[in-house]
Image 1: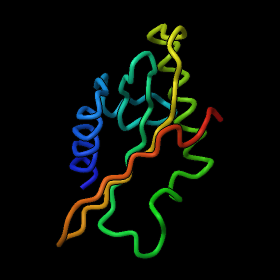
Image 2 (image 1 turned 180 degrees about the vertical axis):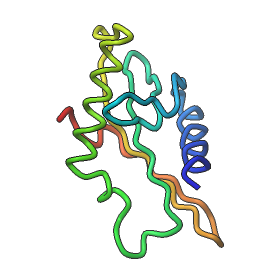
Image 3 (image 1 turned 45 degrees about the horizontal axis):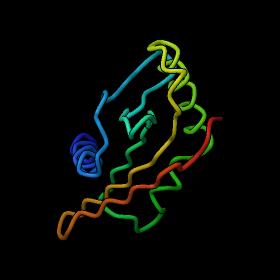
Image 4 (image 1 turned 30 degrees about the horizontal axis):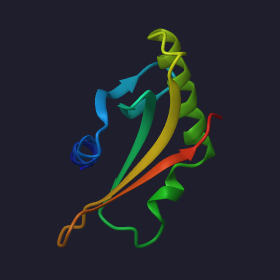
Length: 115
């Protein structure tokens, strides 16, 4: 289900004019689901896919520890590809895909800063 959610998130962002750079970028510290470009901004995107949000809002899953991991991976990516001249941003995309009913997608721009 996670891969389907990431694909839906990517398509939604591309329709908004974002350019896809890489999916599932990994290093020894962790992973970033999507890295995309919005103008001169490199956007590091955490995608959360759920069947429902009955118990916990999906945004709450991207806690401080997860933010810190994503930040470290992003810094590594920026150094590795010499992108210091670009600005960076962290977004969260929530994809709720119920078994019955319509899929909803929420895009939280600049959801958190570097940790």
